Length: 171
Image 1 (cartoon, rainbow, N blue to C red):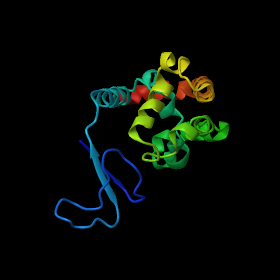
Image 2: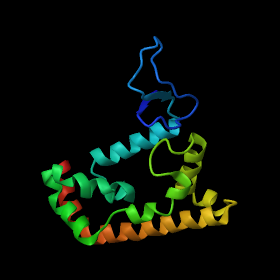
Image 3: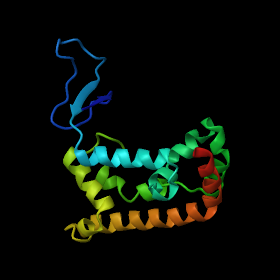
Image 4: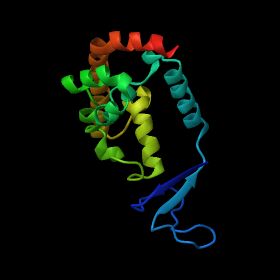
């Protein structure tokens, strides 16, 4: 089970409450919980396995070019070269996200769980995306995939040597 605290009181699913069971208030926060689907648990487990084994080729582009690296990358001294490379070449997914934000929102809780599930399928299932009824939405997600694929090749071209050398220090 996952607990989410949202101080903006956005929609998170079945219920959104402003108190514990004993009626204590929680600074106007929305505390919600949900059971994680097995598919999400498996995806997180796979992602963590890839990180902990330094299997960089199996990591999604979203983890390699996330804006986290350019905002907080300096917090980790061993990633300085990687962060410098990303910054110099402006290699982040921010431009790619612009294609999906209208449908999926910018932050967790802006859209309903059903819409987020739809976004997930549009992002990761080519079959689902190709048969999606709304042509404009389908086009936007195809643009996101193309943007992400282009970014992956740029990231791979520019930093694969750094990643390979870093991989040997992870083992």
